[in-house]
Amino acid sequence: MRNPITGQADRPSAPIPQDRLAAVATGLRRMAPAWQDADRGAALSRFGAALADDDDLLAALVADTGRVGESLLERRLVAGLIDRWVRQAPALLAPPAERPAALPGVFVAGDAVPYELVGMITPWNLPLLLGLIDAVPALAAGCAVLVKPSEVTPRFIEPLMRLVPDELPLRVVEGDGGTGAGLVDLVDAVVFTGSVETGRRVARAAARAFVPAFLELGGKDPAIVLAGADLDRAAAAVLWGGTANAGQSCQSIERVYVAREVHDEFLARLVDKAAQVRLTCEGGPIGPIIKPGQEDVIAAHLADAVARGARVHTGGRIERHGGGHWCRPTVLSGVDHDMLVMTEETFGPVLPVMAVDGEREAVALANDSTYGLSAAVFAATEERALAVAARLRVGAVSVNDAGLTALVHEGEKHAFRLSGLGGSRMGPASIGRFLRRRAFLVNRSDAADPWWHNPKE
Image (tube, rainbow, N blue to C red; front, side, top):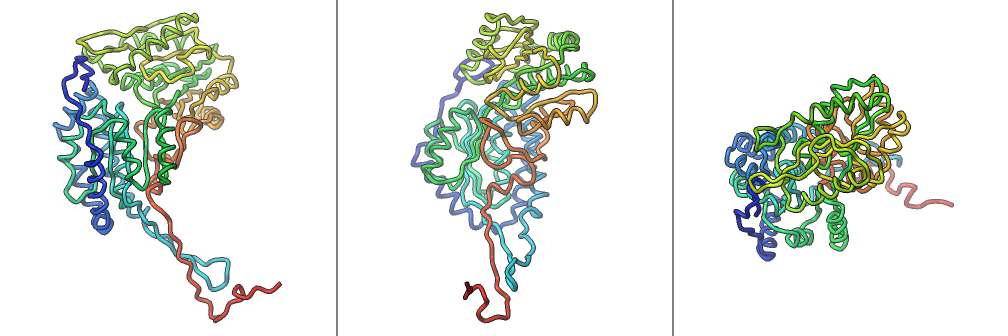
């Protein structure tokens, strides 16, 4: 495995053999019945408490990604989501109250049955958080869970598994794309987080296996800055939203539309703030490019933009430090939708800023995308920002901030277009993805032979 800081392959790859993967799946299925009857909240609480301050896990995350601040945040967010599901799950899983049906004397009751085994294929950019963000509600629902993280960031698996209580039916295994393909045939439902291209393959495999697939795919998130907005606040939020985790998040701000009358002032503030941000190898917050080859995508997008007339204000190139690849916060102006950097997912700390003639054009351009994950809107008033947000074809909109979907998981949302498929990952309703609803229809009528047994013409 390549170390993103040094650029050296300092760990051998150890994908699980297919027969061993099948044995793990079988073992998890054996654990499922007891888990459904167990005190799931207590076991999950012990897991969360152990995870919250484990330094070996943190060190492995840092080695996997080259980041420190985001790794600390991941660990804190995961501990928080475990605590939240422990508190919320009992009420959400309670059977609905019995109610009368339209037929006289008939009543409707019901319950929910968890999928026995759910498989999850998770990405490299936030390996711990995205490895467990769906696993925890699935476990809370009563499912056994088998997770295959990205082969790019496998170091965290071993210290994580040391923290899993014996009764918790969670296994995290190392593997590559072939392992993920094999996993689909072993589970009752699959959750995938990653690229559109791979998501399509997972969807086809799930269809062949006749199991549901929940897909969380890419994004090209826009930010809109309207006249009258607090420009300093907008610049700070857009900078954070586009460069946190070095822009390697699906909800990163990747294009910015600014009302023409405030464009120059906003751009100046953004450039000033971006120029002050340093790389982690210099004591700053911007980590390295994690996935090998992603630096080529970023470089190609930048080269295309410059060739088509874009101006680079900060950053603008891939740097080598200590063998790793890095990209400083990069602010571009003079951009348009003929450029890759405005239409394709860059997945780097790149902020192209485009002047627009008002709200209508900003909305039209923001919606001119094959993606529809999330967005951000800054305006003079909350009411105006919400009005604009309601016209965006995305699943979540941060108002007077950016990237809040990375931190706030309580809001139910769906992905639009190629950004995903299936029920909401966020909000209380997300646990319902891992349950099959069952209805009990009870006839309490006094009639021995009710009229619907012998309908008359």
